[in-house]
Length: 311
Image 1 (cartoon, rainbow, N blue to C red):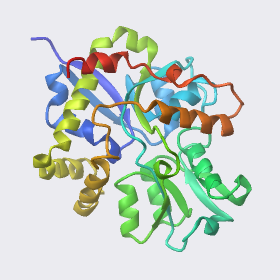
Image 2 (cartoon, rainbow, N blue to C red):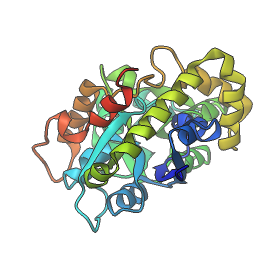
Image 3 (cartoon, rainbow, N blue to C red):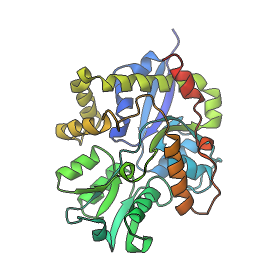
Image 4 (cartoon, helix red, strand yellow):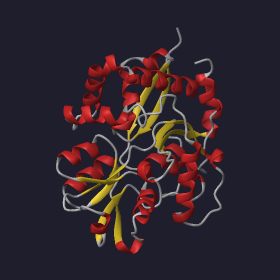
């Protein structure tokens, strides 16, 4: 019997990687002949520079990060040229703009400071576009770079800033403490592609079998998660991996992340129109200005088609 093929996958430790935890704990990766190691990251700079320079095989990241670094608009320099593609959709973002208890409207954000992971990639442009949709210009507020979800949650709770974009369970934990949800990108834009599994094209060319197996295992984990009979065990897995999340936060996260219409994409699809939304936002805010490519330049669905053939 051959040894499992090792995959190093970089992740933000938050609820949107629940299928990966299930894949590990329930043996879905092992059944596909994979040994998946999850490496947590503190910010997108560490994640994307590591992915591009070969420290990781796959990253669960925002599609905007793929576009930004491929187009020379990334937050940091890399040793190697970026040639990333998304191979599987992981979420529509699950993002919410969470603000301090005294903020009741977008008008209340004038003159305040909000936090982002990075200034030029990820969801910072999404936040700016969301604020613009509600009548605020860049001069009406200040953005500061704080880091990943956990870091931004802690800074928000400490009132270092008044708002940020977050995902479950951090959104729900903040709301339990009296913080408010002002809006969601998915509720503002008709289509919105959030997270993808991304990798380097050169790595993919020599690891097609591993990539296909990774996608298959993810889809099997998603099917298991969506089965109501598995809810109790799924919540145990969630709280085991998110040690700072309460059982109540896990329950609420289940309702959001496994919502039958807006939850995890059951087949790991990438919303092409959602990618187009991200491109349009980046065309508005990205520096230096670029004539960005069409959506298909930033994903490769051949591995997904292979993984789902006959399913």
